[in-house]
Length: 82
Image (cartoon, rainbow, N blue to C red; front, side, top):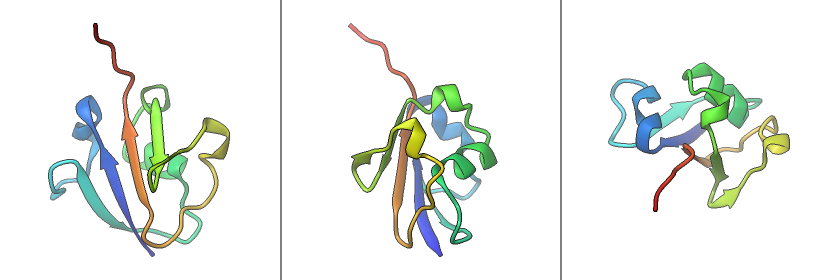
């Protein structure tokens, strides 16, 4: 199946080569989860602060559930500002 994997800010360096800006379109197994992609692309789990699937926040306990065809997985690191 095909999904879209988006990384933002300091996490963009973990995208596979050939990605378009902050997004990669990936062919993955039907059992692939957010945690699978986080681990496969070397994103430290503690840096995957905001994980969103199709615009909906995914809490850590749900990140092992399989993604679906066409899903958009977007991940942001912790951000500080003032």
